[in-house]
Amino acid sequence: MRLALLAIPAVRSALSLEINRDIEYHAAIASTQDRARALAASGSGPRVVVADHQTAGQGTRGRPWHAPAGTSLLASWLFRPAPAEPGLFALLAGVAVSRALQRLGLRDASLKWPNDVEAGHKKVAGALAHATTDGEGGSLVLGIGVNAHQQLEDFPPELRGTATSLALAGHTVDRLVLFVDLTRELERVAAPSERQPALDEWRRRSTLLGREVEVTREGRPVVRGVARDIAEDGALLVESERVVVGDVRVIA
Image (cartoon, rainbow, N blue to C red; front, side):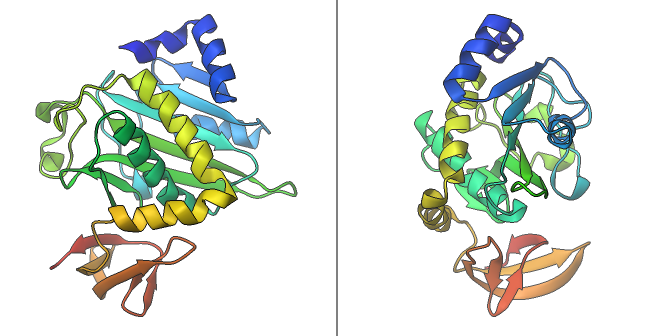
């Protein structure tokens, strides 16, 4: 798998210059997100931590992220200063992922609030954001996992009905090319001037807007109604309610 080329210092150095941020590569690591947050705490500048395998990958609200070695793009980008609040930037990251995938052939990626990218109505990628504050604009760590090469049997049984990969969607993708394209798209949506176009694109790609949904927290329904829009801060507007956290499913 060409992502492992990042283990070669000359390759890593050349790509670092191309994407304008340092690259830290691990064949295996507990979590790219934890490592990038540690770098942020130490005062590191813009950097990206990439791994071929995670032994303790994280999803939303502490859920595990399952990915056999060599099957996914797993990376965490450190932004300094923070380009937006975590919830908003995780949402904008979905647009960046969709754009990168479109360039590689997947033209119909859709977005499910708050941070899922879908292919054929199944999750193919997700984002997770954490921010810190300081007197200089703070920092934000954005972790993204993209299922690239998995076959159905690579997913846990409980996820096989809701998860997919680029391979299962009919696309053979070089993870190294995807990494570079995605980094460029993330830098693009991080620019304040690009926020409104990215939000508009999120709306066009949304699987929820205009449909009746139910929002649950810890398994309990909290809001039900038509998903009307997303706010400028990334909140989901269900009827007159602002939803900033929760699991959402379409009812009709």
